[in-house]
Length: 274
Ligand SMILES: C[S@@+](CC[C@H](N)C(=O)[O-])C[C@H]1O[C@@H](n2cnc3c(N)ncnc32)[C@H](O)[C@@H]1O
Image (cartoon, rainbow, N blue to C red):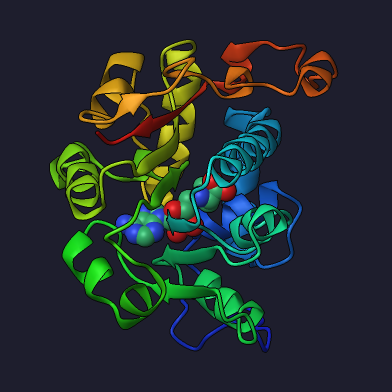
């Protein structure tokens, strides 16, 4: 007997192949995931029990970075590998600061795109495109991108918890560079990336689990992650642990993992193009 297919699941989705997007949704307590996603997510939690904290810290960084950029005058956001909509979506954060700001979400996952499109149906300043971020020409040529974003003015290009799904063979540095070259000077690059810098044995475990998911994970060390941001001038404090990028002091004081950066094993940064 096949798996139960809820009404919101597009027909093209293979319910038996665990998806990185829907596993992430599960870690965050969302409901847009299937039995196969939950089963593999549970295996990932055995390999790295702090994963849900890591995901929440990543979303908290997203909120801090996006708020900072909106307050600095940025009013266009291109969120690549944006995932299934969840609490604190980018367009909601930016529009609280700049109601006219525009947000374009891109993800290859069919459930993320279906849910995102439904959510944004009546939202004139945001759209969701199902596309592969590894093909910058195709992403940038899509009608939704052309309609919504003005590339003669700065854009915040976002890749959070996404580049570790792009293997070296797909040239992640080249991909980031292509987006940088497409945007106007004064644009920004906002990113987070899982790292094997602190606990190589555990990251090896989670990498093994994700061999059975839609996307394999490629944890990288600090120098390799720094190299992904080549050509962007990193704002203070540079490439840093996700909870330490311009932290909210109260949040840091109440940190559920006691501020232990190794348990997060995620680096974050915000760069500006010259
Ligand atoms: C861990 S989630 C991160 C979601 C969101 N960026 C965040 O930080 O909360 C990673 C997302 O990247 C997407 N992704 C991975 N590889 C991709 C690709 N080549 N093109 C588009 N999306 C991709 C996955 O589908 C998934 O939704």
